[in-house]
Length: 197
Length: 95
Image 1 (tube, chains in turn brown, blue):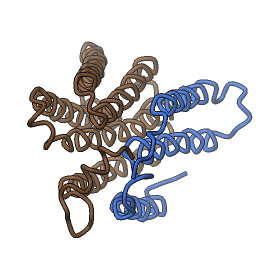
Image 2: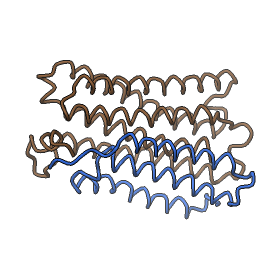
Image 3: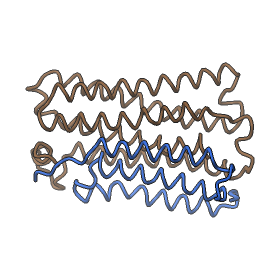
């Protein structure tokens, strides 16, 4: 933990010793774990109930999925580098890394959009069968979370424009990072479950 | 408390490497890999769990943060484990 991080953790004394925003974000992420667990649990039940799942109709492009996973992992690296730069006071470097994170997030959504459009072109829709219902539900909700993360990151990026104001709002980058890493973790489980297994 | 940051780039390389290993396992599964299908599935999911743990510990700073946050993070995982036990003991699931 850097000294800057230590300062941000103790600047707002709380009963738990953890800033309220950070504790709130972790509690929110805990509720999000339950949300995705419900979806994944339903998927596992349906998947294991059918030995031939997903069959010939359920072909996904592993290469595109792999590239998307690499994109999301790289974005996790860039956002944590942005936080590290912010903590050592290198605000312009932090902005550049956060902007890179958002560009990678947008790339992820673009690739996912290309995958979706290829499926739609073959008349594959959520109503086609239960596999595609699961696929579009799981990846759709995850994509919405990525979009939410990008919006959050852009708001934080906008606030980094004013160094004086940023000095009291720097903890928001850590919150944005926590959310972004969570979205990455969800994909780390979605990718093998949908594309590899 | 002034501790150095972990090597974020190195952790990222590990994450990418473990992901590619999972893809490789999936591709060679059934083509000479001396592992039953359930073994490959377990291995791929274990790799995902390792990746998620690396992210939580180092990128989300659970390793360096207060213990309370680790409990907050682990509480839903315990509930998920219970839910998975119920799911896999269900008569609807055939492994």
